[in-house]
Amino acid sequence: MAATLIKLKFRMIINDLMREKWKIVLFAILGIQGALSFAGMIALLTGSAIAGALVGYEGFIYATLSLFSAFIFLMWMIAPVVGYGFDDSLDPRRFATLTYPHRKLGQSLIWATVFGLGSLLTLVLFIPAVIALLGALQWVSAVLFALLIPVALYQYAVWGRALSTTLGHALVSTSKGKDRTALITTLLFLGLVAPMGMWMSWAAQHLSFDTVSQIASGILWTPLVAPFGMAFTVAQGAWVQFGLQVFYTLALLVGGQWLWQRTLPTSMVGKAVPVSVAAEQAISEGRHLVDESLVTKSAGNAAFDLGKELPLLGVFSTLRLNSATVALASRTLQMWLKDPRLSASVLGLLIFPVIAVFMPRLNVDAGEGPNVFMGFSFFIYMMPFILAFTVASLPSYDSTALWGYISAGVTGKQDRVARLLGSFPVVIVMIAAAAGLVGFFNPGQHAFALGIDLLSVFLLGVAVLLPVCSIWLPGVQPPGASPLSTKGAGNQVIVLAMMGIGPLVMLVLYLPIFGLYWLIPSAVLAALVGLLWSSLIAVAGVTISAKLYQANQVKLLAQIRNWPGH
Image 1 (cartoon, rainbow, N blue to C red):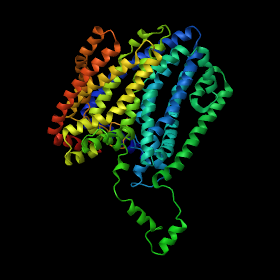
Image 2: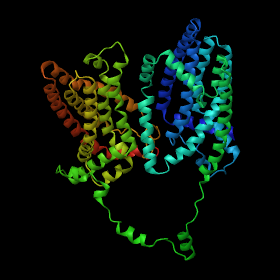
Image 3: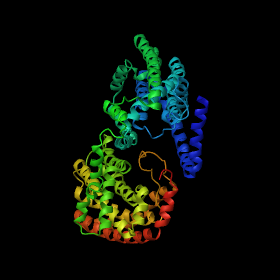
Image 4: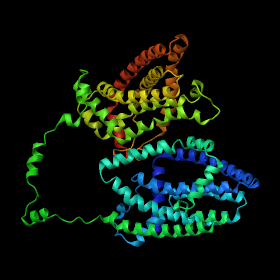
């Protein structure tokens, strides 16, 4: 059974790649880049390990690998939980209609996880560790570390599968919980994993050898390093810690198996809920409802309350626009706030101003002042452009309801204006937060002028991308999917082209604004004149996109129909 599940898992991956050719190209590029980076990492680690062994720093290698193995174990315990639903191909609930919960099925699911992509990635990360130990001439530790890798993968798979099935299922048991989990998952990824290079650079500059050694010595007393703690403690002659690591390894294997076997039946068939006394009485009396007064109450609330469905409708009604534009603008702003695909993406964009502000400060010799910020200022200008791309892609996020707007007679002009209008509050708040962050940490930068300039970049991006997205809609995840998922994302080759060519076109349109900063002494005045220029360009872009959208509505619906899950 385990071999069958492993084959099915890899067949699903291959079918997914073959169905969308752009993924083959993307993974080929990433594979070549990853192979080159991996080769460079091995060469660097081997050279560093040999150099460390020659000067007597073997302890630093053990300390680093102890922290690294603990980090991998934590990732195996945390990532499957917060990312639950991202890949549910091995979820026991999917097998509930095919078989009953039994020990053989549980073991097969574990082995399928061991031979999955997560384990393959972990194995790739552990190979440089073995090479580093060999380079440091630590033969016993290197051999023992290599022998413990299969044990570690099995241990990680057991705990990852058990925790993801118990806690993960609880997190996504309701639609609100699922949306909240998707939002937290994406923000954790964008805030911690995506800028990993920045965190590693900070650690390399601020953590000394003594600090790392002290942390590693403490971790060796905990089960986080198991089973690799046995390899580290043997080399150092710490036999008490070695005994603890043996005990921790056995306890984790046995405890994980026990938890997994107890979780499996519940996840497949659920828990028995006792029938209440009132329900038993209703059944014995032949009644269909326990409380028949609820029928009258629900009937009284059956009338559609537009104010409840669109609580922000009154705000946009004050603009004296037509009803279709006001309603769609209100729903657009509500989507920004409640749809995890949008809210997670927007909050994740704050990583760009954070990088622009703090990346220069990681260099202890960089000093202070505006020149430090200028070297990384391009990061902050990526935020308004990606916001513009998201605004242009809003019909994609509204895919399941788009046919309703079109059949109701919402014109292209109404749609374009409403979606842009409903997005402005979110865009302004994001730009104000980014400009305020830069101004606070870089007093030499004029925050108000920077905010106006970022708004100009957003408007130019809208002018460039809205017409394109009126002819072709970029594929996005279906409603309810994780923002990190590629399910239903469609052909991303065109998206990559838009993200590559769009900034170049926008840069040409931005050149007059750039010239204003040379001609006008006041940065604020130059930014305001530039905002006027970008507003005129945006009006032209919205006008063109409205006509294109009106002419291509049927084609856009046909595109959405081909997206999985929409």
